[in-house]
Length: 179
Image (cartoon, rainbow, N blue to C red; front, side, top):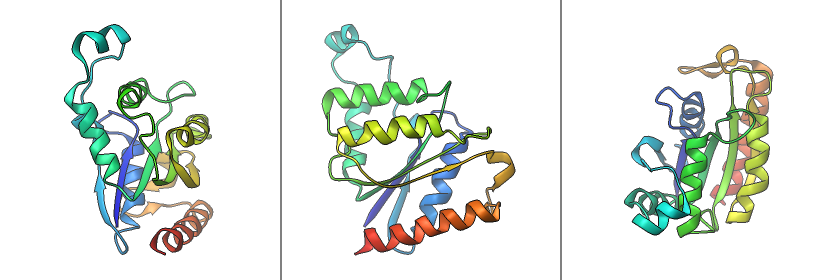
């Protein structure tokens, strides 16, 4: 089985990439894991004019191929002003022009975090309603608020209540995806 994880951000210091990396490590006992850096998929700003002029940049098919090689996806949604980051939305726009059902047949854990008290819930909810239209089977969702207070890169989630809730989700997912 192959798990692919990424934070839906192009920030090199993305807390959502850190959260996705940690989360995917919890599946190493049942899956091969690949953590993507979206900086490996550079794209110009999508417009239909540019699409007509240049076609599809190689990074679009490269991203599609990687996603389609997965059995299970862990995506941690970044939130900018209550929505997807512009950079991730741009990647999503380009890829959906080539492969409308980019997540077809993919089981998914959709997570989010932010420094604030809502933990990126707005972006998470948008993705939760949008991604199934592109074929995703979202098995679970989880939002971690106040990242810097509740997460440590070496230990994971440090808040006992959040950690218990998250580990319950992880245990349930392991049973679901490994059967």
